[in-house]
Length: 464
Image 1 (cartoon, helix red, strand yellow):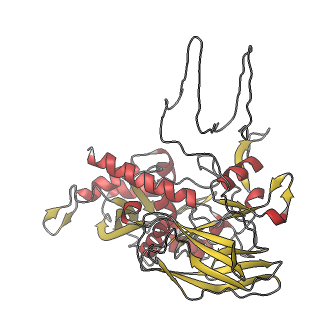
Image 2 (image 1 turned 45 degrees about the horizontal axis):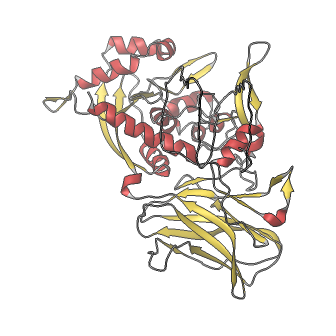
Image 3 (image 1 turned 120 degrees about the horizontal axis):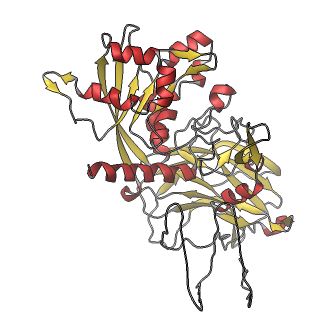
């Protein structure tokens, strides 16, 4: 980016090589070739779309010499979507400064996978949020000190409880919370339990201080501002983005839970539906779940496959498909099920326990963005291994989000790659390994992937 300057290079050849994305921004971009213009996309061809615009720092700076940051409430358990660039400022386990845990996986000289920290990836993630300069903070290594806005999803009719982090340098007369409006005629989309922020000296937390209730849907992103008031002057001290929640910005999915009976019995389903629905709502996705049963006690082929499951699950990609074909041949009453649930995502639950020297298998999907998942007996694994049930109880939700197009956050397939076991994301294994970092969040960039996956799947199914 030239920052408005003109750069002229003539009479030579210029070659630029980058690993990763290459972005060029300008109000107008002119290309002139004396002989030929050649463009090639070796893997995926060429794509032309609407311009996204450069990574802009919001025009309005944080001029108030007090800063108010929005954070989830102390007892947050995934009830609403909330994402922010983690700075390690909440004291909650799983809130680790992203700068230190973002990068990519590589192979070391011994052929072993290793995590490589890359600050450039942190900068890229930072740019995906709205940022405002705090001019009175000075610069950090030549760069302006930024206020990065947290992002929330909130359904119409829902209430979110939030905590505030305040840094007070100069006290205003008031700190007021309000919805940003372009005009007086714009409706009130939210109500607040309080509108005045408590003013103290220094740095302090206001835990579970603010409740925001959404009273009606909206089709443009909304902003909750904190304004510092001195006399007749109001300046910005903090801001929260609430993503648009109108019908056009929501998705829906249908999910089939199939509880399989074998000689071992069938599993007890408690909480799987609620967890999946809760995490989907973070991405503005509504889910309908229906239940069915399938008795495979006398199905020798299935039981043989399951008893050999460690090999089948990881190498036989049609294992899940064959299981669904068995289900389609079942009857509900006198009617064969057939194609009734073809437009559903299918989650099969079995009381089988599969383990070897490397550990126990908890669940598996047919593919990232696929249709089928199978969940093993997590409660049985908990009893067998002594693993706390709370650390593996989210297995069904984790596997379902694979069907929603999400990879593990610690693999290079992920849009952003984090050090393994260090985030509180549903797609990390931090809850299983650390036992004290719950996987209860989905990230803002994952919400877009989930919605895109659902849209693509619906389009593909219509084409069949």
